[in-house]
Image (tube, rainbow, N blue to C red; front, side):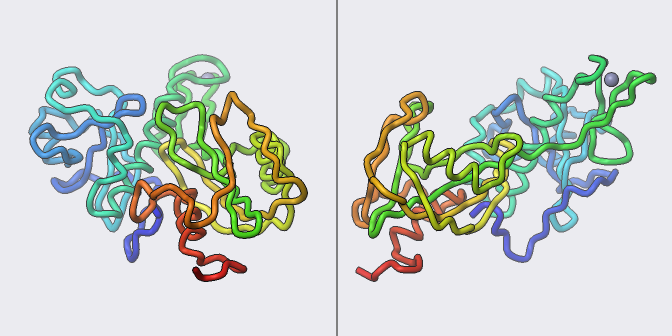
Length: 285
Ligand SMILES: [Zn+2]
């Protein structure tokens, strides 16, 4: 999964490091990422300088084993036009693996910076605070401060004997099979979210919830929290059609092929655990 980076250590602790040639300058635009056109790789500080970039535009975001990651909130057109834009999904394949977590965490922070450029209290511009990882209002009478946000969301693997509930979204164009998932509502416990999402999306009742694991998922600014649950009562599915185009029960042998051999996301990691019959109570084929 994306957070599994072995001995490497990622830190978003505030720092003001002086950039080195081998540090990274992650450049984004909304949900897209800019790559070097010749190699298709993420730009380093050396590349940033060669493109004509200046140090004043760099905003520090994070660090992995002493390698610093910066971004730029206002990318000059003269630099932008020399780069190749790709959808952020391409970050799933970046090598080495630890760089995926760094790049996707960078995307999460970049999007948070971009959506907090104006103060929610007084409307004045905000700018990165010089003392901590935060955005501070430039209005002297306000000085409102805001910190990076993470949105908790649940993933639920609902089991019914030897079958697993899989769904396909109606929101995306070419949805892959997934588990029931959804964001927590204000005032809810995680377990209440699990029950509510399963009921809303499929009309099913569940019991015996078991926490499984969680992961940061910077693509959507979320923390994904995984649970297993058992069906409670009828297995008849009533689809919530504005969210799902399909939902059904699958045995391990009926699950469609995985689209990633070694899934980065918790949803597909959980599906692969079920397919491989590694869960408690599953009989080996
Ligand atoms: Zn303000």
